[in-house]
Image (cartoon, rainbow, N blue to C red; front, side, top):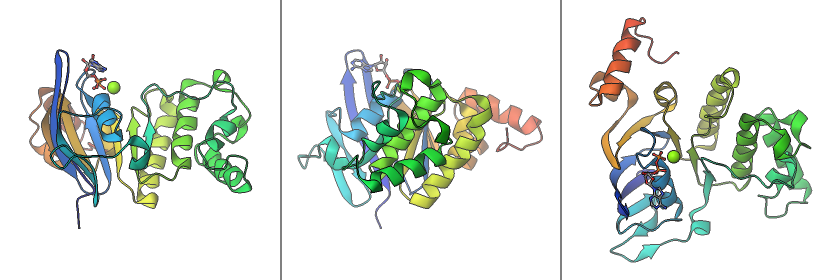
Length: 248
Ligand code: ADP
Ligand code: MG
């Protein structure tokens, strides 16, 4: 069976060059790295919004991009559920309408039932009729996530999905996201610059720095032998605090 995701490409944006390669089994892949490392640009390449100079991107058995073979699927054929870092909800529509709108037939009873289930899943029941301006950042993010799921994607790209979620809700949403991935059994790639979150979520962790992948592996492998000083320090502290690195 093919790997869930196989990614290799090079793309230059003026001064910035992105040259990365990683692959992962089905599960949750976390791209971790500081701001400006190239994580969001990677998502744009995966989604087909940006075309790299060379490389190859494969999702399961589907070739999405292959420079040499001349393959470059347009974004709509990549069946991706993409949550942008700065998510854009339709301002003139309520939360529920925003979610319904992602359905092929927004006014159908089926769309209504699915929207309702998604609102429940993301603790938004009471906010269905609110417009985005009346929602907190975290609530908007959850609406955007629900909307991404409405299209029944084959895979999910979530760019910093929890950065605007209040601390109190973050743990439960993390658990929900994990459960969601397990129940849908589709690849989920998640970007974060929060190391605790990276280790809490990842089945496979890819460390980005300056447009390069400096290390990739399971969280356990990376903790055992961190090549990045920030992670080494964090791992050291985590051990000092009783070695319970997966609970924080
Ligand atoms: P991250 O998501 O890891 O914080 P980004 O992928 O957004 O980082 O950006 C990586 C680098 O690429 C940054 O230095 C950014 O300024 C630059 N960049 C992003 N988009 C473009 C663009 N369209 N043209 C030129 N440079 C860009
Ligand atoms: Mg980003």
